[in-house]
Image 1 (cartoon, helix red, strand yellow):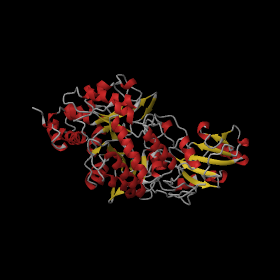
Image 2: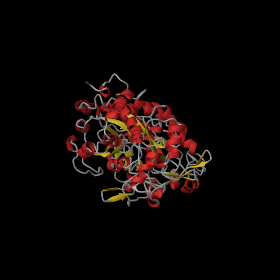
Image 3: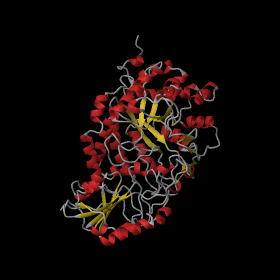
Image 4: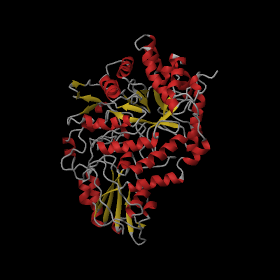
Length: 591
């Protein structure tokens, strides 16, 4: 007789209620771990320890009974689909055949950072979320729907995004994945994004979203990131906790499938007259259970950010466990505190034996395991994974990164260009007799403007693309990938740009993954634009007028580093006398 959990006519809740009592403790515990996995050559399963994965694939699936994985490296769309099918076939060999939920950080833009995002490669390529935030909601919806279709095609059923933290401190190194600094704009963008990925309700054609990082990761003390020990604190000197919380409350009302608390620990935070414990948010019962679960009514999945229990060692570097405020606790004690806080899943961990021991020794009750296991199983049923977890490899090869999707991404990239100043140079339409000098742009793309020359002295105009300024760091794992520290351009670079401007007209494109200090560039450049995830070809299309640049700043541009340092970390767009206010855009007329 077919068990009820295999009956698609029953509700997800009914099917879950039938399956859960059938599971062994090992199977239930396996549900509560969500770690990194990597695909092999030609879509094969990796049976060695990977660059970041800790165990062979068969070990985590068959021995540890795990079935939630955050995929990092992927091959071509066909290989990605083949790998997903092989992983599901492996999971089908387990006692109850619990299918795998494959998740991913964003992988449709430009930034390659194994701790946060991946460049598009075989997927269609779009602006970073900051670039999307510079545009209309219709552009965000188009992106989300196409990204959803491409994820579904290769078997990815969970998005570890959107990131709706308010970019309230200009120095913070993770704001390129946010929708900017304004709570209302962030909320509108997030609601559109969720609708594009999940649909009107979660179902077999949805990609479940994990909204992050509850209750808002933007107020990092000194603008440092909580991935690292020196950035563990979050500060609320401006008293704006509620403003940072607002987009998450809206996400709950809109039906987000999951929530992810950030690493940061609040310092000096009071809620309803009560001092909040100064421990990382995922360890914090006042935040996860009392605020998220009870006050806001969220009953979806809460997955911690990665590696709260153990140190992460990879590629010859270490990153200490992000156990901020509870560094003195043992791994077992940290695990108990995460469970007591109300989280369902341990991100980046695969220490199932540790949790099994806690249950068998009575330190964690099996009923506590059942509460989280129920939520995790029910989502799999809602997504239709128990009914058909496999994908069509031919369809994936045809759909993912297809010409129509690439063209849509290109058009949105170009549209996201934000014109800040212009002294009559735009639009820079094609002119065969124009001589153009470029830096940071492929000559092939620049030829659309005219003839590319080798010396600025020979040029009618120079166009320079500048990377974002930051202080290079490379002591801890992933640290070199996070652009942190000063927002000032180096004096030598500014002097060289000034020398260019003395011999020719100058257009400068500033990468705005963070709000760089553009004050000296306004004095140097004839035209200044900002971008966040735009290819050379898309920039040329925007500046030439082939695609109208209509981006608006998703945050203000501070006038100086002093203004940034003097502004409370939790106050969005709060610097004194900003150079450009949030929302600034200079309209360019077609010629």
